[in-house]
Image (cartoon, rainbow, N blue to C red; front, side):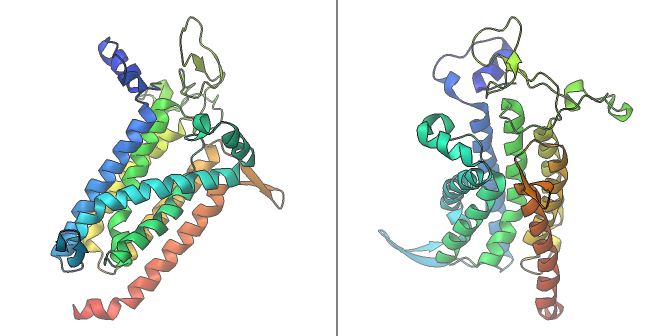
Length: 315
């Protein structure tokens, strides 16, 4: 594990970076990269939609007078809005899932502010905030959410790399089973991993280790962040490959909801998470939300295809 960027650089080159590089957290760095990659893809999509005539530039009154604003020019501000409200949503949903963490946060907000971020909470609140912001700036929400679909999948995949590299606690359940033969060409940590030097100091002391981050899990677990990173990056390429073939507005985002719902529901079966007990059945927050996303996605594909079918036949 590489809790900080300096840890990774030292392992790669043998050189110890000086302060302030030691303050750069690997998880935060990769999350920042995920937003940058998402913004880059979103910019490309908005430019394409404008070139296809689906979006149009608009006039905005600024301090400099009237300015012509192209849709892709709001990506920077939209990304900031997504980051702020995504973070707030992540914390709110985390407190709903783990009420005790709210008390910990109140007692020591500095130490707990970046822990326990919940993806779906961030996605839901950020989506509403970005739609409101872009609509206020003259961009039709339906085309905006379509444009963000591949970006969201990519951002999640890159963010999960940060979880894996830092060892932030988003790992799977214990995995003591022998590695399957079909995975023999892969390193052992791909199947089961103890997350040595994890950033949250979870587990037991590592013999001979000195300094910070000297703990590892007592038993190996499924490296679920790794699985999600690979899966979601592949799903990004899938969405990116057929984005130009989808003509009905809204369908692209619905496909994202379907794929994301399937991926998250599947991974929850081997992932550690807080469970709710409903009718005697243990179920996680993500296992409640992901089927809803799947059903909304399927319903949306049917609805939007029917709604825009006549227009597409004429076009």
